[in-house]
Image 1 (spheres, helix red, strand yellow):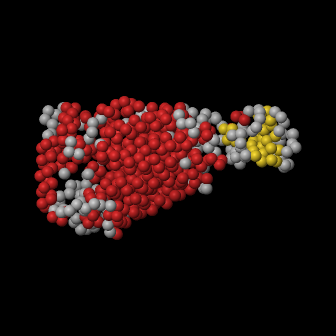
Image 2 (cartoon, helix red, strand yellow):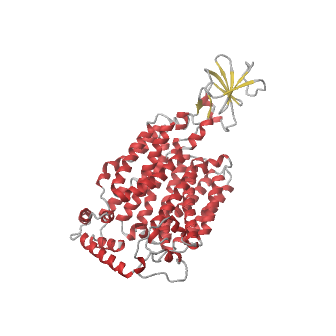
Image 3 (cartoon, one colour):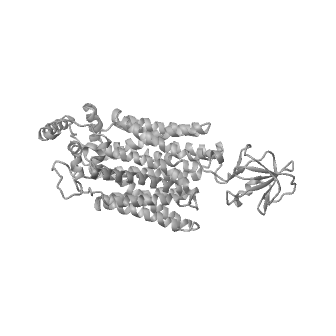
Length: 569
């Protein structure tokens, strides 16, 4: 019925898509802000070089064979966390400064780097001295999130991703209840207000709480805008339109790299990033509600007004009449009920239906694994890009830029080669690239950066494709449930990703090892999934279970699986 209704509307609105194009670009512009806030902590929570502070004024500083009167001159020589600095105070005391402790030399008045005499060890009760060469201020230097408080800095990104999880669930449900437009207004305004508020937080805990709220509204907008654009864009352009919401998100990552390079104080950096939301906040009230949602709520007059505006913009003299479409829909509904005697009673479906039988259960486990792996790989490659050596700002910019061609390749591949035949090789290739990264010597930073870009490209293709593929693998009765549960696994992957990156302290290539194993396993399991290109969308679990078999499960009533169609049902 949705397809019939859409054909009627599009047919009566003419070939021009001026209105839909304006609505599309206005709404997806805000996705840039989502990408910004998701990756902002990459530079906001940087830990610079540091040592314990000392209780007095320093007159002389010694590091190995180099001496200076200013500690700022020593940072260029600092190469390892195991290094320490020897300083002499005005009162003649000599101290050894480590990162998380300091030692006072007993009975020594001669300034030398090596010392084997007695020492008194003290904690860093006077704070820390930080290297401000690259970053004038970060949240780490602001609230001393080092040593025994280091874990608080590492929780910054996982707590944000936890907010993403809650926001997707809450605002996705609210958008179905109160409408897409109101949620887009609320979440975009919330992004601006919470984004600015983060810059003026007075301590770490208020910072985390407001960032959690910022994550909720950012995720809420990103979820709703996917639905919003797919309900406005025609079937033929829907794959490209929904896929390139991801591309605008990638532009946000590139903006983080640019602003991070220009602004080195964390709260000013946060304000600059948040201001990108302002243009949309000022004009988002002009966006109309989608006719599909208005029709589903029985608000036919309002839907007719939106259709009339679309017709005027597209220069159509005779727009379609909602009343005619509704009468056609009701006639089809009656005939469906008379023809399908086996669907006499409505059945409520639960997540257990995703394990209907062995075939569906195996499919569900595989799809969930792909969602998890795609998200894990996406954020591991993005978050670890600043640790690859070379220019960290350029690294992040390139990691974001490489997504743009990835989504083009995904769109072309899924329509020409098929969903499974595109997904499988890119998952396995991302695993192979992870293995190659582990073989590259750490001195070859350019080669490491190129390999990470290739890995991000491969995982980006898979990550963008899985949305549509999931919708086509499941029948109408559980399609939304399948996509929603997969999205939940995606959020779990994004929460785990920062912890995975932190495992570099165990082994430098541990993140790539984990992503590679998961990607290879997912790629091999994908081979057992059925191909859905050109196949009709299934309506029942029994039909879905027969996908990929030689049985003819097509009833003839189901429309062919066109790009993006499953997402709008």
